[in-house]
Amino acid sequence: MQIRAHVETIPPDNSGTHETTVRDVAVEADTYEDGVAQLRAQLADGERLITIRSAL
Image (cartoon, rainbow, N blue to C red; front, side):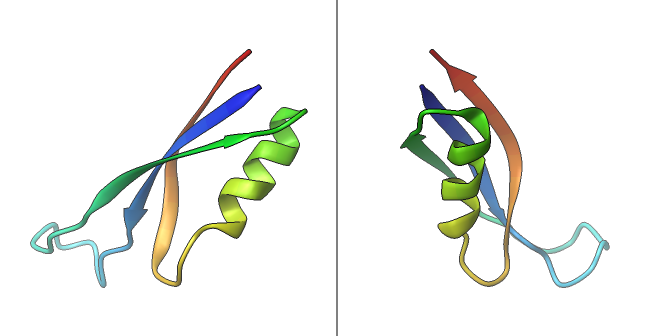
């Protein structure tokens, strides 16, 4: 199954005045849980997963 996610840079505060970037990441995995673990392993410092979706 393919697991896709949007990864966003974390702003320094919640003021809404900071630019963030979003990138699309995809992995192939046998299970949803394994796919999410792979996605989390690809996160750099200061990034977070904002959407996760799967396709069989």
